[in-house]
Length: 273
Image (tube, helix red, strand yellow):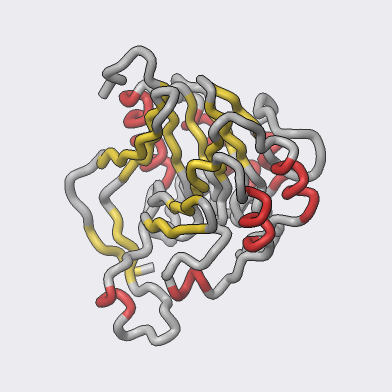
């Protein structure tokens, strides 16, 4: 699926690949490295100008298997034909991630944040991780970094955690710190959308003067149907839907942004997580 207009700029978001060591399966059921390889094929077919991975690249980034997981993920992602921007998620470890991807242009300092300017569009990648915890946060240092880069060009923000509840009871049980402060920082700036992962579901919510939208995971999804939560009063999902792989991509023509989804597979099955 090539770009129809030569002047179109295309950005693809992928997220939550949760790659495990070679020869192992995520939740003892899913070969996430193989799914990521399928995603790489699909991304290349879209011929993007930039690819952004919004975190949870691997499953145990802080553990003893982290280096092996990142090595496998790096091997798979090396097949991408477009530049790659990596951001951390709560399953990632910053030190191991830096070691595995020395060519990434993260800002200096403790956080893995990136700025990419492309065709009159600014893409800002925020590090929303509290290392070792599920919940996310944006501290004053990270918000200051954002403030300094919110200038005139239209902006897309990318980060792992949604900065607000997304209507998924289990995931909303890990509240985000700094969401209201983020809302104040971006007020009055041309932020087109905040793009996240983390919740393994396609959900969009109004957030101040913009929108927050979470993309589906490379691995299994959290179902958003009421039936999936019926016998779990705490909202813990019973099944992840596996089989469909959907890519979110953004087409920018210099004045307007289109957000689209490409389905790479035709069938889905349910697995117990």
